[in-house]
Image 1 (cartoon, rainbow, N blue to C red):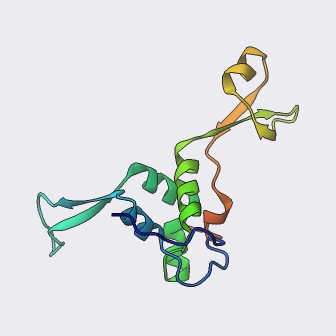
Image 2 (image 1 turned 45 degrees about the horizontal axis):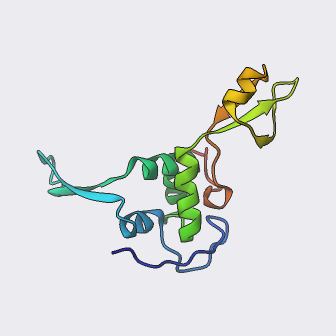
Image 3 (image 1 turned 90 degrees about the vertical axis):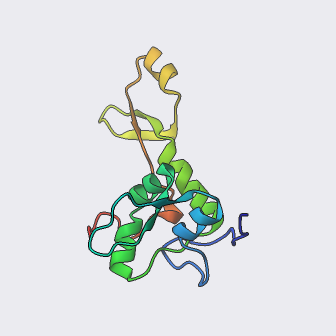
Length: 139
């Protein structure tokens, strides 16, 4: 059963206190499976949480582990920002390139651009409110 979490906030840059973490959102939405370990080493727990690949992709794209490392606590996000982060990690954006090779304006349809001979770049772009200010600083 999914919990109702707040749906507004400002991600890692001053989110209101009490917003859930991405892990809490994943669990509330059913995006986590508890898995039994086949073997245990050095007293590891018998089970572990296995997160959906979109959650893991969003965590990497937005720097959530780096955030937890540098802040000493997980990033907090609204429900809408968490879902937008999942979408950002699962759907790359294609943009036309200008004459200097820099992306321009709005997303374009990659097939139409290719047929018209327009150079493009396709990449994953983070959802800004879910992006940690510590992304790229390392662990």
